[in-house]
Image (cartoon, rainbow, N blue to C red; front, side, top):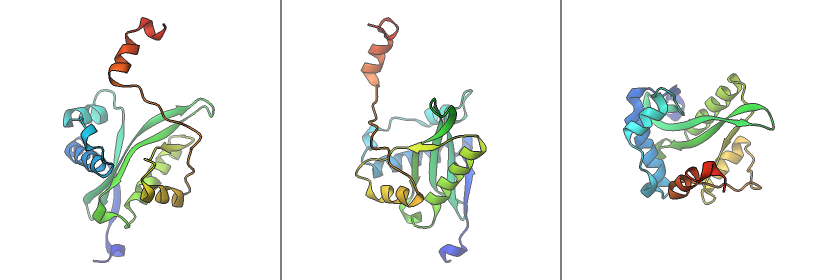
Length: 169
């Protein structure tokens, strides 16, 4: 069957998809050489996506009904613009489905979702060595934000700051 004759659809993940979402997370981590950092469990993913207060959402790209990619995203907010945005935490398409339009369809879905929800923008980060993804993003019209440096506070440093006089020294 030619690529043109194949059916590529996007759908929201359901609770039954949690093992699949976790599998995509592991596949992405392997691709990014970060598999040692994945500690999320199915219970963690289920709680984050479908718990009493969902923190994120997942869109699945399906080729002929079989999931071949995912996008995990959540809302952020721009104080300068005064509007929400969508932050794309992870996007991954399995190697055998690359080049068939799944990544672009996931991005188009996120763009429509952002506009339908009154969001001003769609943001994400990419590892600086990931040339194939950077090229793909540029072809979509994305502009790098190289003037910004990302910081992270986690683990012991996060706990230490949380316990220090309400964060004031």
